[in-house]
Amino acid sequence: MVPPKPAVLVTRRMPSAVLAQLDAVGEIDLHTEPDDLTHEALCARLRGKQGIICVFTDRIDAAVIAAGDQLRVIATVAVGFDNIDVTAAATRGIVVTNTPNVLTGATAELTWALILAVTRRLGEGERVIRRGAWSGWTFDFMLGTELRGKQLGIIGAGRIGRAVAAVAPAFGMRAVFAARPGGDVSGPETAAAVLPLDQLLLSSDVVSLHVPMRAETRHLIDRRALARMKRSAFLINTSRGPVVDEAALVWALEERLIAGAGLDVYEREPRVHEGLLSRENVCLVPHLGSATRETRATMADLAARNVVAVLCGRPAITPVRLPTGGRSQTAGVRRKQEGFASIRRTSGDTES
Ligand code: DGY
Figure (cartoon, rainbow, N blue to C red):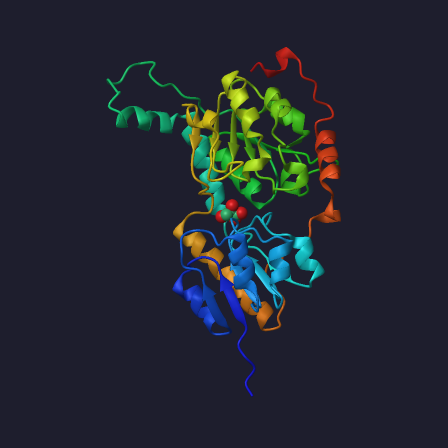
C-alpha cells in the first residue's frame, strides 16, 4: 500500500511555484483568508500535519506545537523567529527553519530609504504638497541634514547590519558597530570600527538597529539609551519593534533629545503609538523590510525547500539554532544592564 502523503499547513497565500513544490511531496492545507489564523484555529488545523509554513505574525507557541501531534518541520517565511517557541519545538524533535540571507539586500535597502527619508524630510515634504500647503521655493525652507562626513552607528553586526554598513561609504559616512555586551563584533572587516554601546550612542549621527528580538534586546533602546544620543541624531529601526521602548522614544522626541526617527517596526503591530503618529520628524512605514516581489518569492521558495527537505528525510537547508544558553528573561535583563554599565546620565551628554 502506498503510504499517505504528508500534510502541510500553509498559513498564507504563496506563489504557485512554491505551492507546486509542496504539492509534489504532500497535501497542502492552504489558509487563503487575509486575516491571521487564530490561536485556536492554528491548533486545530495543525493536528495531523507534518509540516507548517508560517509567517512572523503567526504565534507558534508551546500549545500550538503540542497540537501538531505529527509535526516534523516549522518553516517560517522570515529571518526573525521570535514568534516561535524554538525550545518547545526542539524538545519534540521538530526542526525549525527561517529564511536568512535572501532578505538581507531588501532590508538593507529599506534601512537606507528610512535614513534618507528622515534626514531629508521626505515624508514631511510629501504631506506639505498633498495638503496644498506648499507656497513655493524659499532659501531656508525644510532644510534637512546631510549624511556626508557623519557617523552611522550600527547596533547588531549580523548580515543585515553589515550590508547597511557596506553602503555607508557611498554616502560619505563612517560606519561603526556596537560591541555586544560581554563580547566583540567578530570578523576582520569590522575590527577597526567597534565601539562600546554607550560610546556609539554618544557619537553617532544616525543609529540603526539590526539585532534579533531576544530577552536581552527587549527595550535595548530605552530612556537611558535615548538620552545618550546626540540631539541632532536620528534613530532607525528595521529589526523588531520591542527593541525600542516606544513610550521612551516619544518622550525623547518630545524633549527634543534626538532629531527624529525612521521606523519600520513597532512594539504592538499593527498599532502605532499615538505620540509617533503626530510627529513630523518621524518617518513611519508598515513593516516593509523584506517587502519586494523578488525577496518575498525567494523567501517563500526557501521555506518550501526546507519543508520538502525535512519531509524527504534530508537535513534542512537553513535550520535555526537555539539562542545560546537558552537564557532566562532575568539573565537577559542583567546582560542588557551590563551593556549600559558605563552609562551615566548628565545633562550635557546629549548635546551634539
Ligand atoms: C523577517 O524576516 O523577520 C521580517 O521581519 C518579516 O518579513
